[in-house]
Length: 272
Image (cartoon, rainbow, N blue to C red; front, side, top):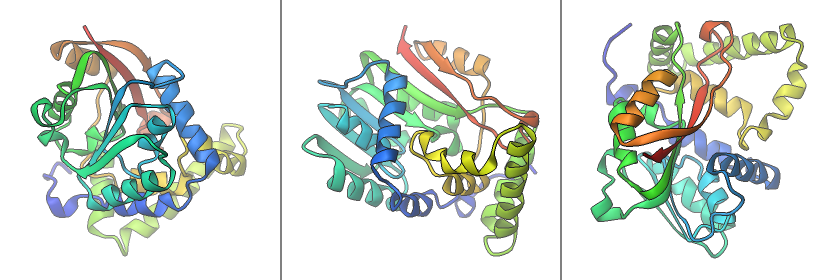
């Protein structure tokens, strides 16, 4: 269960985001903008430099463009994600100055890339294999008075099980992965129903969750390797060591000790 992750075990995040990008419409864009506004704590990003680490589909880089950021820099390690981000921003990004390049978080440097008023990395740094180091690398890109916004998997009693599941999902894409998707989706639908929610309404309105898509998020969750998680206390301690303080936190509600997956806790950090 604790075998090391290799490059061949890495999930193809970019292909999943490329598929998702075909679904981007005005409603999803509006939901993404609302999600970024909630985290930055203001309506506009006018005059701000925005760095999106792990841009994925480019949807939240696009949200920053639409909120009037002076400059948007999107980076991702996956070439498919970079291409998808460029395509989305070229089509919908308007006149905002933006770039999208293949850069690892570990290679970001203030000397090379500058510093940013907002450094944003949602659901990414726990997939690097070196999560705490990745947070530190992101933190050094924050300008004085700026914000670091991260979403990281919440630690649960079942995290070790999910490491095993993800490894099997990535290593056996034609056998284990399809069966895992069917079983997990069925379990989620049953969980919605047991908790008094209408499953079909929940799935149909899922785009209200930052503009995301239920099926693509399920695929991302089941295959998302490398995988790490962190508790709120551990994150607070890490932030303090990096010279930051938590100014806002939005914990996710974990059901059944993590049997339905580990959700992302959102943190807004400011330099202490």
